[in-house]
Length: 306
Image (tube, rainbow, N blue to C red; front, side, top):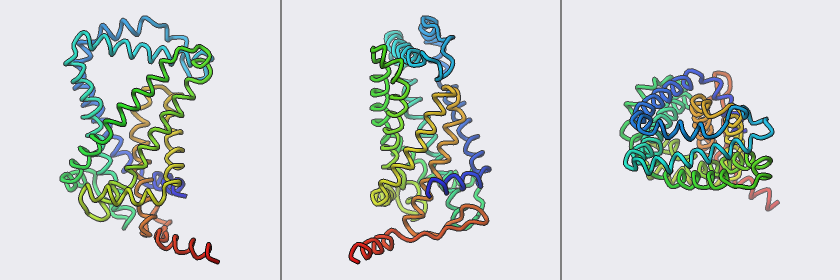
């Protein structure tokens, strides 16, 4: 039900999704500009490594040798990383900071602002402008984005390590038949597990107007009591996302990342509203009035006793 309601909420808030999409495009542009020195410095290394493999015959995931193609992509990326480290370690570290810290930090600010906009719509159908919400919440969104980005650094490092560990496997049979599926399932499970710890974080801060740290604790309590539902819905959302990305290619991320972020934010807000028994709008015609978890627990215990 939460997944269906989040999709309905998504469809009725296209203007907000578009604003988040434009914000993310700007962040992508800023990131690319900041990475230009690295591109100029490492351009020859990148082109030489890419040209060392023939990728022209592997265009889609449906190709019989797509697993080999995927393995070659990981091998090329790993070789580029090693050669760039030997050529200019300082510039490589700078590029990694931009990719793994600065870009996610700016993305997380956008997520918080988007949740603030959703809160106004879901609670009273009020319209909140993106920039108004941005400046209004700046004192909390900056701290939230900073802490969440630092929190995710270890996760991203672990994910990168595991993805390359699987992707660089040498078995020809595994590469051909199991590598793409293994990577999709691995990423889906890892991102879903990571999402469980942060689902209620931003909504708790916004709804209760509490501190960033108090919001994390309150959000964690919500997820702890809705663990299985949150896990399975997250699994569905991330599975769709990674399948689509694998089929359409890496360039589709410029579109899919903003869209999946918007969908996840809506799921976060609906999960939190539902857990608190808060009445909320999905659209102008549909109003949800869920029961509080405490009330649901009492009903379940009564049934068990009877």
